[in-house]
Image (cartoon, rainbow over all chains, first blue to last red; front, top):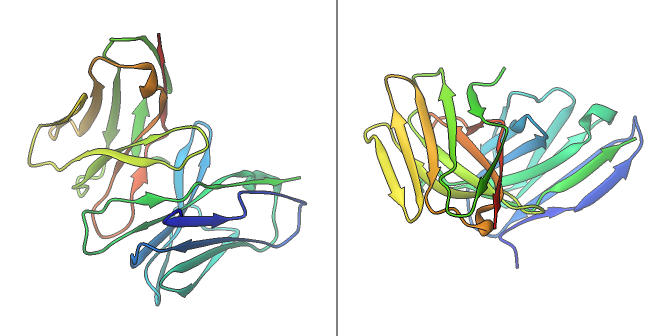
Length: 113
Length: 111
């Protein structure tokens, strides 16, 4: 079983809909992250959480919100999806007691029509 | 506005060649410089990382060269193989926030 699990793997939605992407991990890590990947732009940080009560905005947080429901769960919401939010979304984890290595999920491909 | 600039965007080499991917940064507070490798349909995975107290680090066929004064670092892949075909991302961090990634390089190693 994957250590970092993202659901769904693929999602197609319409402009204006609310969407939630979910991430769960079994690695026991305290830090979790959401990145989006776009061709030519690499991976850009949306939100990150260093523990359940510590949530921080990344460089492209506008239009997104997150919830850290437990140490193992970190969800990303698009309140009102728009076409330029079409991208590949990755959840990642790391340990504050480790070497800063990120462990990524397999990604969620989101298409907003 | 990217804090870590990566080049080239794509690279094609023959098997056995030595592809080189370059990254440059501006933030002098960065103290951790990893490279991630991503295969199609997968999330990125850590390949190799360096801290600024050394100028070079080797792990197998992969080498990071680091130039602190120029604020540049690069990845060299010795004796490249078709199985090395992937997208490579450089990144940088201060340890107090989260990794900032470069724009990625798509490497193709031809047989």
